[in-house]
Length: 105
Image (tube, rainbow, N blue to C red):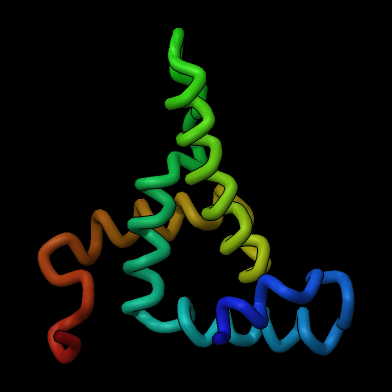
């Protein structure tokens, strides 16, 4: 139901809707677990790398699609791709052995 509701309204339709959606993104990605997921999304989506795959337009389209979804998430969080890459880099260095923290399971 929620997914249908989110896709049914254009984001520029209502500022209250956009504000509520941004708050929802911040709640989901705002804690340590959310940052671990953001780090994984940044790595998987290749936000700081070229998406072009030589001689393979389908792979290029797939890569660009993954990057597009990641950029949407970062935009809703008012982040840049560089911000996301910094989070990914920090998590890879700092949390490699225990990305969720000792208390999270």
